[in-house]
Amino acid sequence: MVRLSNATHAYGDETVIENLTLSIDPGEVVAIIGPSGVGKTTVLRILALFLSPTEGSVTFDGRDVWSLSEDERLKLRRRIGMVFQEASLFDATVARNVEYGLRVRESWTDRLRDELWSVVGSNGTPAAVTESLDLVGLADKLDQEARSLSGGEAQRVSFARALAYDPSYLLLDEPTSDLDPRNTDLIEDAVLEAKDRGIGVGVATHDMHQAERIADRIAVILGDGIAEFGPAEQVFENPTDERTAKFVSGELVY
Amino acid sequence: MPLEQVVQLFPALADLPFREGYIRSIIYVSLYVSVTAVTLSTLFSLPVAMLMGFTDFPGKGLVKSVINTGMGFPSVVVGLLVLFAVSNQGPLGPLELIFTKEAMIMSQFVLATPPITAISLAAISGVSENVRDAARVLGGTRLDVALVVIKEARYGIATAILAGFGRAISEVGSVLIVGGNITGSDGISKTRTLTTAIQLEARQGRYDTAMVLGAVLLALVLTVNAIVVRLGDEGAMR
Image (cartoon, rainbow over all chains, first blue to last red; front, side):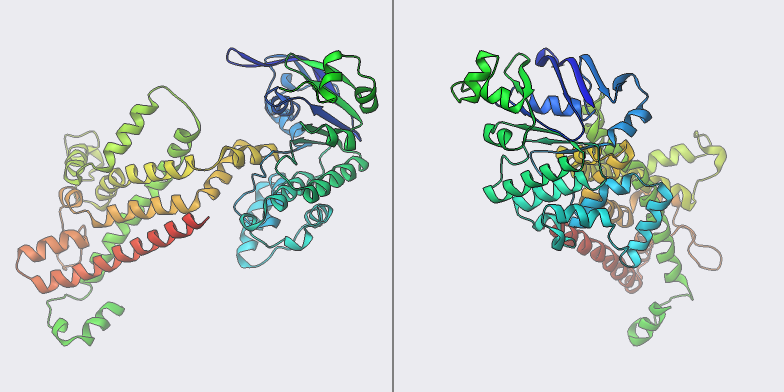
């Protein structure tokens, strides 16, 4: 379980999130919803062990992450995948992009040997790369240059790249906000497939319908910390917080 | 050596007072000095550019101004400073580097470093933060992230290195001062480069030899610049 406890984060004087508590278990999808600018990205970056909260704590399987050494933290960080709102692919082929997470986990001697081999000819593609591209329906684009992909394809490659090294948790920051319905469907299906494999998924989204479609639990953030965190049905049908009720019914518009 | 064969193809050139191996030795000294200087300068400039691209430190603006000023620094002045450094009374005097290739490498290092650093810095700063974040979030260490940035900026960095090489191989002022334009008693170049040889041959009225050397130098510089332009185009298409 990855858990934020009473986390606060401030950039200088500006407090972005305040006193937030939420967690993601293996094999569930947690949607983090709320209006733009409320700090959803910051929450994900903290969950990805990318950013330390200015107050409060982050635990990964019960271990306090920010009291560990940098090496220990890197080990934990490597069990988490993250996909940004923009695809952020490297200027290389699709296969090289998806391989990246596997490559950085290899020893330097293996990496050097692979680099040298790749000059002579192809190394062959690791099965994990083909499998995760297959999941997003792009196994046929292995050798294509990433910059020649459409926006939707690039985002799906980005998803496959985060999944290829078999992370325990996957964090998605508005993964479909720039995508058409078909690509959105493909990503959502891949999220559910990842969940079935036992991966814990955190999705930040401002799309209530998406949250309803894929989430088991929902955290609603409204300006000053969590307004509600609970099972999806409860948040949608029987919210305990008045503002949540307004937000999910679309009345509360920021 | 193809050059001698080329010379034999042109009867007018065959009469030139080339001593066996003279031109070859000049080209060798030129390339040895400039390639070494640019290699060392790249090894120094890239980490500096990375550091300046990704970290903030007090005096960063000043360092940037110094680098930019260095791009236009007159090579004779660099030569003079290096001469002071390696002369008997200078701080590096005991190493006895005066009138050696090593001293020439030092002065070309000083000349090539500002353009290589400045152009690399521009290329590295152009790599989007998203790409850096992606490398880190996929499990990359700091070193992995640095390697990704270098890879993403490869066209700009290659341009920087070649620009540095172009400056080094074509400058005459500093190598003349610190190298001394020396040949051995056998007439083979010790510290004579293409540029200093041209300067000498022209002064002594051997315009034909100067022209041949000039053509060789021009061909070298043109090749390098053609590659720079090509890389620039390829980088821009991305």
